[in-house]
Image 1 (cartoon, rainbow, N blue to C red):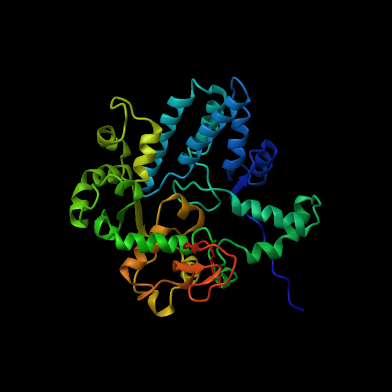
Image 2: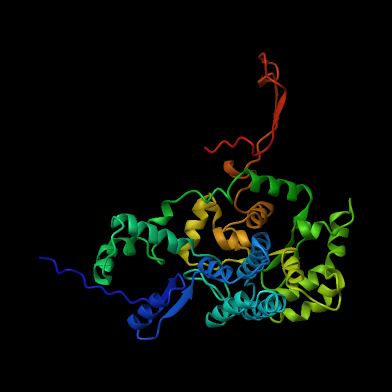
Length: 388
C-alpha cells in the first residue's frame, strides 16, 4: 500500500480585512514571523466612517475626494524599486498636507495603517512597491464559503477541506491556468484595438523615449494634449522633451528631483506642489519595461495574448505600470508596443481586438437591402461586439 504523502502548510503572508482577531491569529500561527497585509478596500471603507461633513451631501463629496486621492496613491507605479518607495512616501506627505486639517480622523487612520505596511497596501504576491487590489483573495473567500455550504469550519478542518484547491490554485502552479485563453474583457476588446489603431495613425510610437535598460516612455493622451495641433511626430518628440525629463525623474531613484519641472508646467500655484500635480505627471507617459516573470506566468500571458508559438521568443514580454496593467496584467499600452514592433502579431491584431467597421443601415437593413419603418442609423465601433 502506497504511503500517503506528508505535507504541511507554512504560510508566510496573509491578506486580511483589517480585522484585529485575524491579525492576531495569524501572528500566533507563524510565531510572529508572518507578514500581515491589509485589504485596501476594507481600509478605505473604515476611513470613510471617520469622515465628517456639514450635511449628508457635503459628507458624500468629502468621501469621494478622499477616496480618489487614496486610490491614486494605491496604484502608483513601481518602475524603480527604490524610487517607488520614495515616490510613495512623498505622495503620502502630500496626502497628509491636504487632509490632516480637513479630515483629521480619517487621515490619521489611513496614515497609521500605511506606516504599518511600509506605506503600501499589497495584493498577495505583489512585487516591491506594487499596490493593487484584493480581488484574488475575495474570490477565494467566496469559493471556500460556497464549497462548504457557508459553514464556519475549524482551522484544521478548513485546511483539510481546501487541500485540493490549494494544490491546484497554488501561486507557483500554472498547469491549470495555462488553459485560460481570454483576458478580462476590460483590457481585451475592440476599444483597446481602436486605441491602438488611432495611436499608430498618430505615430505615437515615433514619439517614444528610451530610458535605461530596455525601458521606454510612451506619451499618453494627456501628453498629446500638450502638443500644437498638426505637429509632425519628429517635432512633437522635441516638444515633449521637457516633459519627458520630468516624467523620467518621477520614475527614477529620486522622484523629488522632478519638482522644478512640475512647478514649471502643471502646477497652478508655482510655489506649491499638490498631490494631483504629481498624479497628472505620472499619467502623461506610460512606462514600459521587460516583464521578467516566471516561465509559467509568461506562458500564461502569451496564451492570453494569443501570441503564436513561433513568435514568443522574438521579443521579451513587456509590462506597463498603469492602473489597468496593475489590475489585469495587460493594458492598451502593452498591446500598442507589441503591435508597433510587429514581433507578436505581424500583419494584423487578434480578432477580439480588431475595431468594428462602420456599417451603414437604411430602414433597419444594410444599404441596398432596405426594409420599411426603420430610421437610418449607424453602428459605431464597439457598439455591437462580436465576441467569438
